[in-house]
Length: 351
Ligand SMILES: Cc1ncc(COP(=O)(O)O)c(C=O)c1O
Figure (cartoon, protein in one colour):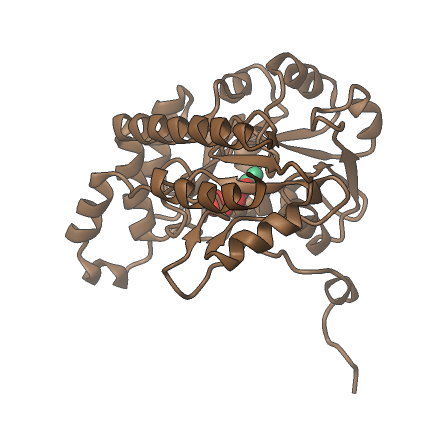
């Protein structure tokens, strides 16, 4: 008998490690960049009115109604939009479309740790490009990515929260001989984004999610915008019914309430500013954030110590071990009450 029936590459790879989802609810959970506020009122109404009898039938396979709404919001054609079961599904479709054992993926480190895991599933080599010490993109990035067929850039980046200049993005997209996927999971919190560049660059894909800014992480809806020919090809790769019927309708309701989106964004950015001020007064440093989280370095540069102290007080943040990342913790911008709880513990330790 064989010791394993898996493809050897599956036995060799490690699974993605998601942030902790604790079973008890009395913890302050600011570890996975979820939104502390509820989704838009239309989301509640859509779910309340949904007739479960309809679930006997398959959903509309290509998510046409919600793609039309996304197209209008982003000023593109519906043929330039693909919908997915979260943006993780979009990333997976992209890597299955463009990466293979002879078609490497390029991505940055530190960045979203799912990218190399998805590449490993396709037995695609990964070129991991180190960001500079301030987490900016190195000038020679195009030299380092010459063999790659897909380059993924999280903008704003996770877990660091910083963005990259648009002019630098344009230069990279223009100079890269392959597909550039800009993962804009956090772009709704940022000053600018790359969506308008899709019309200028046939090799650009921009992905978005409803998990963060729309407070729908539990629903699972994401999408990508690119040229019709790229979207056409990606459509071949996706599961036949990759977005369920209820999700298509709830996502539409959420997207249609842009006023609610702006209001929650403003509230979160105000809390982020408060967190920045208070941490600075305690001697912390942080990376200027364009997202709904802050990559913060305590005065002793010991991220693990802060993570453990917070955990002991019932507050969960995210800690990324490593020579550089280990000097920080990543704090999701929760409600003011949650951030106050975090600051109390931080004051006890560092004051
Ligand atoms: C950079 C980045 N991209 C994508 C995702 C995944 O989002 P989704 O919930 O849409 O799968 C995350 C989630 O943490 C993320 O940080």
